[in-house]
Image (cartoon, rainbow, N blue to C red; front, side, top):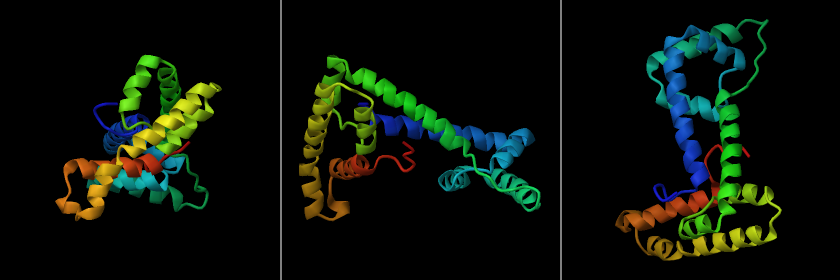
Amino acid sequence: MEESGRCPVCHLIDNEEFDMLSRVQYDVTHSPEVREAIVNEGGFCEFHFRQFRKIANAKSNGLLMIAMVEHYSRPENALKLECRFCAYLDGIERNLLEAMLSLLEDITFREKYDRHTGLCLGHLDAVIRRTNQVELKEWLISTQREQMKREIPYLEQMATQSYYDTSNAARGSLVRTVEKFVGRRTLSM
């Protein structure tokens, strides 16, 4: 949590997503069986196709697209979509939310969490929905508000200067604040 300064759930999912993209890119290049499985799944969702295209080399992109076009240009093959990235990351996200809830039930962890940036609103809502503890829900909402208020001095600096004249701390605050509201790009809760 201290390392990234981001929503810890978003941060861990992003890391897992990048690692998976890297593994799949390698497998697409070197394993016809993996390519065929991905083609049969319908490839990836729009977001993960774009991410794959960015991380993969020309050979990996070419091999996958050739296989997809050849498969789906045949009338007997109906297009379907089962993005393996989304399915895998949804499971990771559920596990991380359960782990976060468990950690937040510990008073010692709450002290660390209070000093941190905290969860994005989407993950905060997901954690709140997972607990029946009224005190914990109230504490999370109150802490969220205080965490957000701590960003105001940095944001005020940004509001009075050009982006390039602001400090790195203020630029980081902008990134943290945006993520606080919107979470990660592919939030799939």
